[in-house]
Amino acid sequence: MDSRVVCAQAIGEMIDKYSMAESLRCWATEDESWVFFNPHLTKAVNKTWLAPDQKRPLVVRPQLTNRKALIILALTDDRKFCVALSPPKGTINADVYIDFIQSTEEIWRKLHSNPTKLCELWGQHDNTRPHTARATMQYIKRRNMM
Image 1 (cartoon, rainbow, N blue to C red):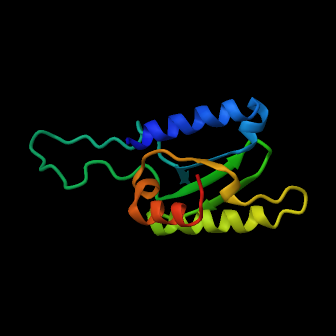
Image 2: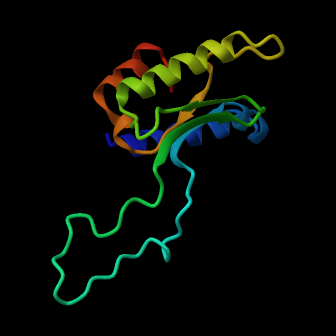
């Protein structure tokens, strides 16, 4: 059965079983995005114009910023969150994503006020490669995460 169908059915069952407030407390959302540092040039300033007789350079327009990094964020409805930043110009693969999940669980499990294991939560991921990689899926199954 398609994983999206299974996910939709599980969400429906969870909402039927619990109230909406209880259901929201069970969700953990994770995603990543680029963060740009020192964006000193605007797109307009960064344009390169060539004369008709000039040869086209290999790179017409250099990158708008000299540093960028990926940030990963996990959060829940009851104010738990965890943030990680990749090295500059780094990327996020399955290993980095699994390390982030492990460190998030370690932090959330040790909370004094409201300790939470990730197996108690419903993880919401998009379908990017780190989230759908075989290693990530095996880790999620092994940890009984939903």
